[in-house]
Length: 189
Image (cartoon, rainbow, N blue to C red; front, side):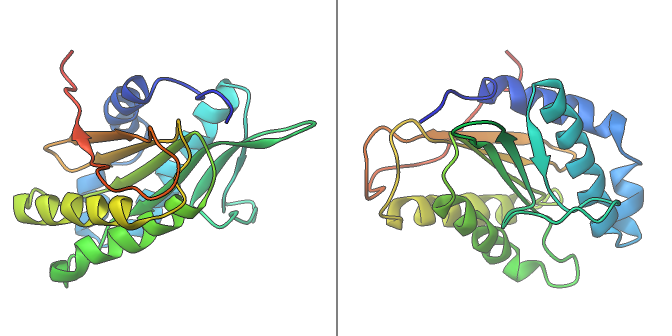
């Protein structure tokens, strides 16, 4: 497996600190129900960061470029080209928050099957601690039940609510994910 495009903890801190400055007020967009716009802005920021790091981004943008199974992929071009980062974004549904953990997990399931050294899941619990806990518990279940993990894969999960949080899981054994869990990252250090 190729090396990571950047340290996952550094990427988490960068996303959580810079993305709010890059996009239109998230609270404004969410209040208006413009999740598509918010997702588009996040993908545009990730595209820019990927290009700065020397990757080609594959995603649906305003120019009509189509995504590649996932919301955004950083691709290393050339002989032996491969994915460096795979990302899914799922905000859930403010009108039916009971199913939000399941919605996030369904998108996370795509990351499990996709081969990349760094897999990024972005969601928002909208300050709902129970939803956050339910979501992480569901993602842990998906990690544990998936049977084709590769050593070195890292899963980075970000909750982009106003009470931001991040989790990381590194795969240390091939195959079934029994025992894999997302561990909370200290974003202050």
